Length: 296
Length: 238
Image (cartoon, rainbow over all chains, first blue to last red; front, side):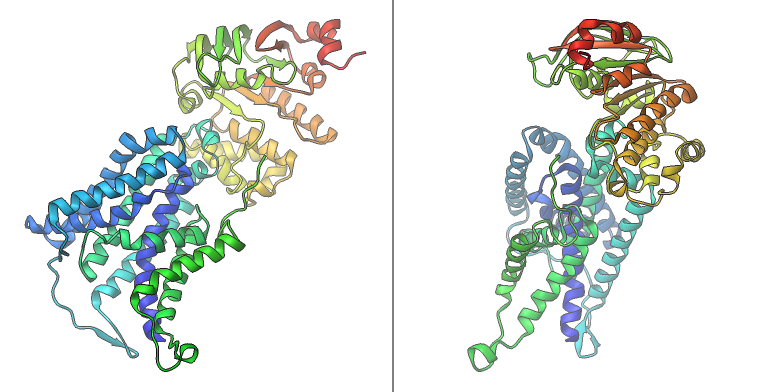
């Protein structure tokens, strides 16, 4: 059981950081950015490139996050802002294309073998029978700290109120004197920055490969949709719930049903996300904390 | 603080104007009501003044400054134009206080606090509900909040799109009183669009009749109220 908790904390934190960014973009621009998870991959590779250039891990990570955040704003201004004029579906297809281009470019530059950040080998700590490494503890603490900070910023600062106002009613935000373009730029920076942090934390914990982001696409979308697109709290709760469900499914001995001792292979993990997504869309399409769509 | 439109043509789609060649003038601190049948372009006219509908030709001058080509948020901040849309005119998930804070987001902090305090004194109904989400307010309270939110920037020009829509008769009276008091207390020029034409013209100095996107009549409100054709077609007179 403790193993499930540890697994939930680690994987849930990564999914939450990404799902929150995805839901912020969805909330302010009403479009699902498929390329969002690639910002995690870019974060990991940026840190690899910068440490390879001789910079320390901490500085490389900070610079990597900043680079990805700036790149996201550039991509929004040059690409997504134009695509969104033709509608959210066109922007979604464009983001799918961009995701493929990013992965292909990274493969061209770095090849398909995983890359490792220069971190010392770590001994796992026995936590009530489950092993957890110091990097995983850092991963969970940093993620929770950033999520809490984001929640405080959104709730108590004028920037947070502006973001929530733009998400609630973009046209009214314009005639309230808010500079919507600037607010959206900041949302892209925040979202991509959080994604980059998740990519770097994951790379420190294991390795970075071109599929790092793509492998998280389904759970991240599942968490954002199950939580209620546009709801930060919903995305975080759904991310940890999804990670817990994934872990439980892998830990359960299915032998009672199929006979003998039978544990599912890790490859079945994405099925949990799919199942949760289907159930939620069928019975509560607005998600855990989303609002039912009303017309008029 | 005056509003002047010269030959304004505006619409949502290129080459499909909704309002055409509008010339009108609303003097400083006056209230002007735009009336006309459904689809005559009343709301479009208002939206073109605040910059939410593309203007293809003509000139819009607010307080002596041409605002053509200026974005909506800059018209609000730099030209002190405030706009209250007919629907979706509050930030539903935000509290009453947060709505006011967003309305005054570009106002210095100290001034913002003072302004909120003044407005909550003016509208005690809102003061009692300051921690409540705007989506939980009644129709009348929402309209008051929308008006208060618009006043946060201390505008000199206030544009109201059907402020009495969906209100009970008693609330309608309060709303028209609030509009008149707003002009008197805050020294603003008011341009409003109303279906409830008689009541609106009664508190107005000027009236504008718009038919099929074109200006049919423009003059003192009492002249419009007493015009038999306007009365028969748009004011419900026998």
